[in-house]
Length: 157
Length: 157
Image (cartoon, rainbow over all chains, first blue to last red; front, side):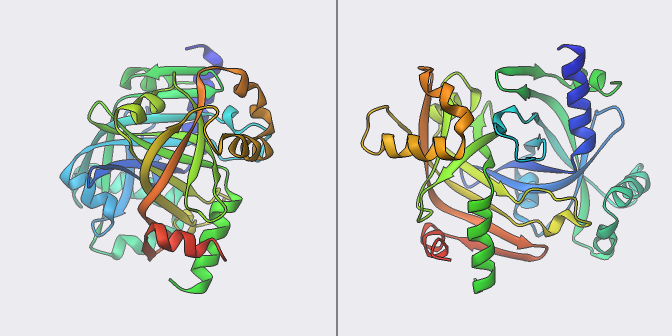
């Protein structure tokens, strides 16, 4: 991947705050919206969701998911030139009080201050998505397969 | 569903032009970006994609997909209040020259004029997604299960 495409990918992950989560349910790939935070080195992504939500039930039953981050549509002529990345990975629940829980909560609230009220609800918890691979489309006809290692590499851009 | 939520759903489908497509590949739900057009009565959604693209290969192998349309992130304080709908359905390829092909092409080019060049490429074709059900989130803690019939009903709003 060229340096410019790496820079665009790093900015895409940092400047976007919502993603589409792909889960598996009733023999269909399902897609829903999630707000996310990212580890500084892009080695993990975290979402904070209710166990009452369908996508959470899905992840409890089948932990392979995809997280799709797409540049916000700015109304440009050709939407195919929007940058986007699809990261597939394993999802795992993080219990309250586990090591690393408090820094995650702080990071989440710094990005989503309106979510403070959710932390008092017992059905909400963090899920970690650890990348196993993915596909990055830097624009029309410019696509790259990515690995967990290439994401970590890109995080220094 | 209340009338106001129906109106918001109709506007969401009409005012958005990109969606996240969920497909199935290598034991993972995969998510990618697609530009879409919709039938006036919301009975079908159409995308125009290359058979060289991974999501198209996925649909050829497994035709159950989801189309997730999310309100464009406008930077509001709480992204959980963004409206979004996830529509699951069957995907089928439409051959050039099939009845209905020309009106689809006209509708697609009216919405995506920059795509004209794609119509001269032999690897691009339309896929129809016929809704079988879905989930509509009108904002935080306001969600509705939807059917193909409820989508048609909403299209009159």
